[in-house]
Length: 231
Ligand code: HEM
Image (cartoon, rainbow, N blue to C red):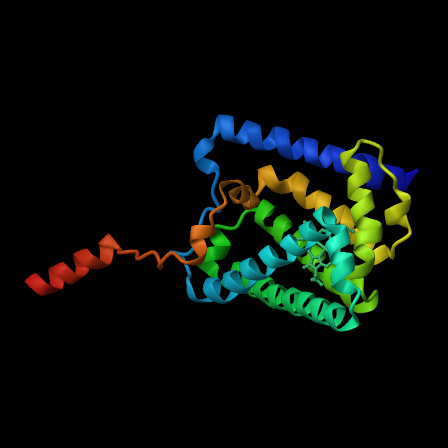
């Protein structure tokens, strides 16, 4: 019964909350569609956290998507053991890279007083669920190996059953508890999207990855410098 709720009902609730919430936020406060950058408060740690996190999570999520959209191609690719090893090794390396980025971002939010002042309870909640997602993903990759191979026989048909409105929970309940937490938590993240900085995903801000630093000029310091110059 609980499984039915988690894997057959909750995904729809989360997606509905996400769609309605995103539309509501767009209509009521369009300018809040942003990650509310804190780069002007601290930029060094942000660079070392944000870059590995964003590159890593983008590639890993594209990998998840390829498994859903092109399962037979993934099966064909993985049919040669060497290719399976390379895929698994690359996915794990990316997972560890983005985990390092996320941990740096968490330390930055908790350790830097200026950034901490601007941190809301929703930021903390988001970082927590992201950490759970990444930890359970890496845990799955390490303890239940060849995930890229069995994903297409379990997660992919589960997603397909959800998409065709005939959810089949057995595909997911047959997996380890760690992977089940990973799957449910993914929908928690989706449901949280409209209420957190994750909303910036909707504006696809990929220019962040290559745009130059923001240069902030403090008027106060400029005034002091000017005064010192004139005196
Ligand atoms: C918000 C959505 C999701 C995020 C951010 C996410 C993130 C991750 C990360 C960071 C990893 C570790 C890196 C890797 O080995 O690929 C991973 C692995 C994995 N994820 Fe997810 N995931 C999400 C949704 C899901 C869902 C819904 C499933 C379905 C059960 C799933 C199944 C897996 C599997 C099987 C692995 C292990 C792959 C392997 O052995 O390399 N993920 N995920």
